[in-house]
Image (tube, rainbow, N blue to C red; front, side):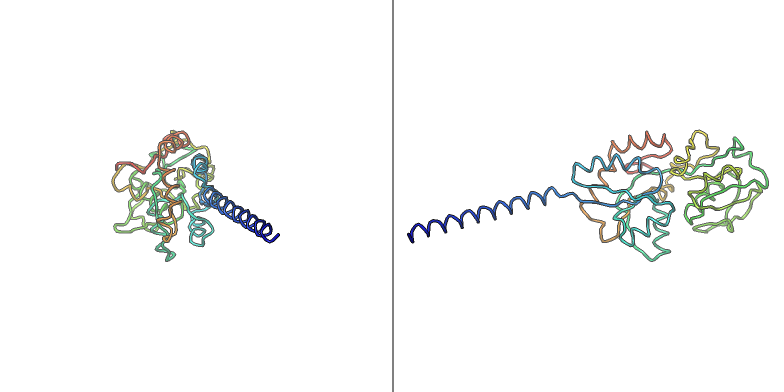
Length: 278
């Protein structure tokens, strides 16, 4: 009887051990297949590109959740607060200026695209038709405003004071054309076309407003060496600059499939910048 009882106990122990091993094995498998969710802050039409990237990343068990914002400060505020993990909407110049102004250390982890500013109008066909008193709207954030003013200088409409890093309308040295400058939130520039004579519009805002770059009355020159500061980036908190999952997201962005989507979406108004030779 004792021998039989001993055999029964040994049997129960063996079964129990088998169940523990099996459970541990299932736990490892589950962990290996666990999906990682990454929140990416974007603005405007960029979801068209990111939706394609998100589909491809699903195969790597990475779930990209897009968080859309409406103005140019919100995505960096959210990234700094940890409300999003990454953002992808700004150029290097904007990011550097934002970090300086807010004492933060948000860090670029990969280049995405470069996109020119363009001047649109419902009232004139050429930038040379702008006359004294005509209102030209432009983005009011520090870097895009400076960029827009430099565009107007290249077009020969104004000149700017020398040595000013982020010129504002107060830094216009001469304005022989006599145009009136009206800074607005970048998202409102396209909407201002019904009232203003012309508007300087960022590419994403232009796309959302169904403005074709073929109809622009003037476009920023984007191929010069000094244009590198206008390259857009994926940004992360500094502590996450070597995050392996985030690097996979950058790699998924920087490939031929994404380049095709960018071309199809933006019709040439935006170009891939990760391998671009300036």
